[in-house]
Length: 480
Picture 1 (cartoon, one colour):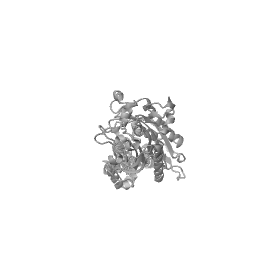
Picture 2: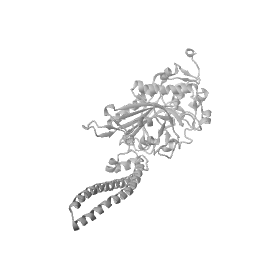
Picture 3: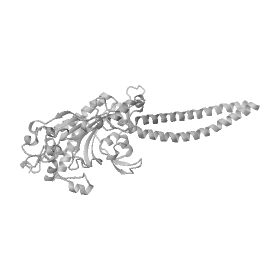
Picture 4: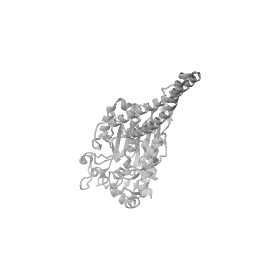
């Protein structure tokens, strides 16, 4: 939620911000509604002041009546009668005004919630994902060296299989029974497929809590609609959410698409002690997304599915732009360190204004190389150079910097340490980033760790979570 005071002071900032995000939010209509609300509030205050003044006037007239006589007394009595009737008229005016004010405030809030946060000035302007720009790239070295700009076969010595072929041949995923149970874009992880899934999540969770000091929390997958509004997922993006109870009611419940919702809402409505900041939370949660509008796109396999599990990181810090930027970089660093542990080629992608979404002032995506996503019309696997553009890369992480956009909605504040009386408060800043989302992350693991004999080598970092198992597909003599 944007700061209305800032909007009033610089409406062009928000007009341009909305335009750069392809938003249809009507800034001028919001300003007009805001002026109406403020005018009604002033009139309400004027009536309240008049009512208080009448009480004092009646008291003063009563004292004078006791001493008056004749025509003076009659005149004072008439004035008294008129004053005593005015509160009833004011009460009727207040009732009508309150009704108008409530309707105007609701209309203003509904429009206010649609206004996106303007992107930071250093975010490139663009229409959508096609205008995002690569910032950096990392390729593993040594035994696991792999360069997306060269063919898989030239580096590994054999023609690779896609993850769809691998999971079928190794009996890691059952898509047919998944669809039978839950419909399209559903699956059942089996055997080593499920074990590998859990290993990735455990590695990511331990990495954030044990190695980087984040506090683990459970995050509810089922939340109130008000929580979805507070975290910025309603009203925009509602088409991607599963409403599971009273979808048209204020007390409705919805399934979350990220653990960020539960982590951010944990402190909603609170005033925090500045000494407790920054708060660093992580969770493992099941996530649900309708993938509305994605029909026919990535429909096969594990890339775009309705239910998945995710380790998420959230930071709540002081209202300081430089501190927010520093945490953004740190959170991206955590993820890159994890991907390096897994020795997965990946790149950072600077998202343009049109791909930021309503909430974010900035967003950096991390993408892993997935050979099966770079194919020609005959299904032949290509290199990054051959594929061109963004083909072959698949988003696995998204790091967002939100400043106070989310915390205003959640009314999440901290006491201003510079206020000697301790009465002033500030809205916190918030950030979030995926740590690992599975089974999507299994795609680059399976495809890049596959062997010529059809087996898959288990990444070193995951072996402790798989009882020392080194290979998926057959036992080695040490494992027999």
